[in-house]
Image (cartoon, rainbow, N blue to C red; front, side, top):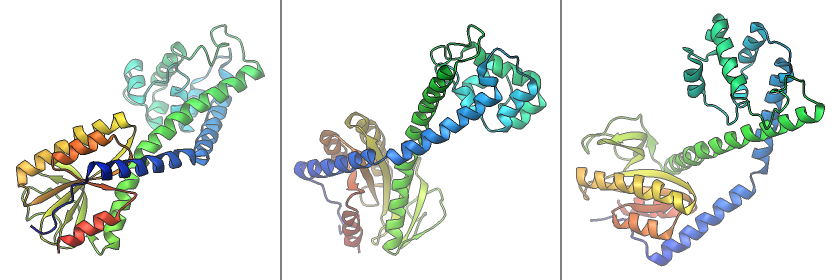
Length: 305
């Protein structure tokens, strides 16, 4: 058959894994601007929250003040007063309220009060030591609490952003690369037989291929479908989950469901991967490509003409 995907040698896998890890390290070391942006945004949120809550001092808060917190979209910062921070879902359940939507809480001051009472009970005593005594904070205590809270929220925000941007950014790069090769993106559709889905010189994203979802599905020149999983890993340990327990499992399924002559399961990788995991995934029929060297994807697709 034309266009048989290459099976990389152990030395080639090791070389690409090293290059990918180096790219990951460079990206992390150059991320100081993103951290500063997240920290500054979080500090502003907590400063405004403290202002609206009277610096968490001894004064009683009115329903209007509490409603103003949610009107100002400070619900997230309010949750981060807890030690440890509490999620939206957990707070809603613990407070026993129907919704944390600002509009709903404004109409139901009794539920708004219940939400704040939960936060008061689980407020972090290390960041806000003055609350238990009913005193007002000193300026040093206030600044320390603002800084610590901003760091806590910024760290979580940046971690979430990295997870989202890693996979989403990689999918975007793959799709843009396919467009540069002359492929057109078509609307997503469930693919249960090989004649369905994208046709010649087409691809689709987030497609249901059989009973499993693929990040990108490409119609190769020889009519086969190539299912590409975009995998980003931040550690060698994490690569087992991303590669072997997810992408390789999907490859097993697609090959059994559609046959080796009809589908090409593949993974587009970036980040940190253990060479052993790469070798194991490849042995299960998963074709491996790297975001730092997309030319190899071009070579394979061209070989299917």
